[in-house]
Image 1 (cartoon, one colour):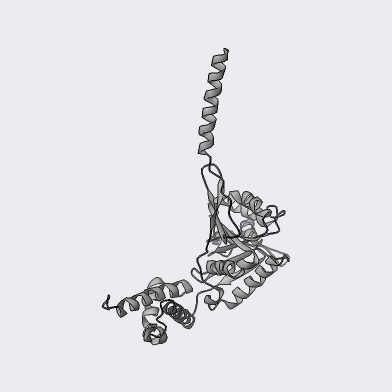
Image 2 (spheres, rainbow, N blue to C red):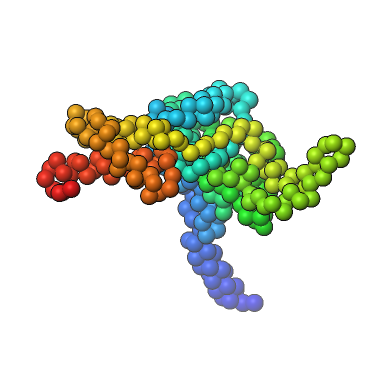
Length: 304
C-alpha cells in the first residue's frame, strides 16, 4: 500500500470515528447538592440520570388518614439516613391513597439530611446495576423508587428486581434502598389455577410452585405497607384540608366556601362517586376544581 493510500485510509477512519463519537450522548453529572431527585432514562446507547431540582408533591402533614403507614415508613427512612439497618419497602393498595406522595414527601422532609431519590421505570430495571454503581460512591442516601410497579406472568424483568432485593446488586451500596409502589400485593397477577396444585402433607399446607414464585418477589421487601379505600368522612376531611390549603395559597381563607364544609359536601361526594373511588387524589382534584371555580366566580368571570 502506498503512503498516499495509507494516509487516505487513516483520514477516512478518523472521520468515521469522529462521526461515531458525535452520536454518543454527552455525559451529564447530576448536582446532588442542588437536585433532590433524578430520573433514569434509557437513551440511544445507554441509560443516564437526569437531575430534577424540585420534587412535586405533598408534605408529610398534608397526607391524612394514613398515619400508621406514614409513621412506619418515616421510621424506616430515619434508620436508613442514620446509617442503621433498614428495609426495602413495598407500598401496595388502592390507587390514589398516597403511596407515591408519601415517598415524595420523604424527600422534601429529609433533603437537608442528605436524602435523595432516583426514579427508575419498570422497562429500565435491566439497568439497575448501572444505577446503583453510579450512586454507590456518592455522599448521600438514595431511595431508588419504582412507581406503579407490576409485572405480567410472562414478564422476565421481575427477576432483575428479585435478584437486586436478594442483595446481589446492593451488596456494595449501603447508601441505597428500594421503595416500590403497586396496586398488586405480590406484584404479579394471581389466578385461581395457581392454588389448585397446593397440597397438604402431614397436616401442613404446601403452596404450588406457581404461587411460591409469585409470592417470592414481594416477600423480599422487608417492609410491607397496605393502603385501603377511605371511608366517606375521611374523604371529606381530606377535601376540607385541600380546600383550606388552596384558599390560603390564594389569600381567600376567610371566604365562606373555604370555611364551611356543608357548602361543598354534596359536590365533593358526587365528584368521588363519578370517579368510583374516595381517595386523597380524588379529594385534591375536587378541591382544585371547587376553589378554582369559586375564585373565578368571585372575580365575576364565571356564572355558576
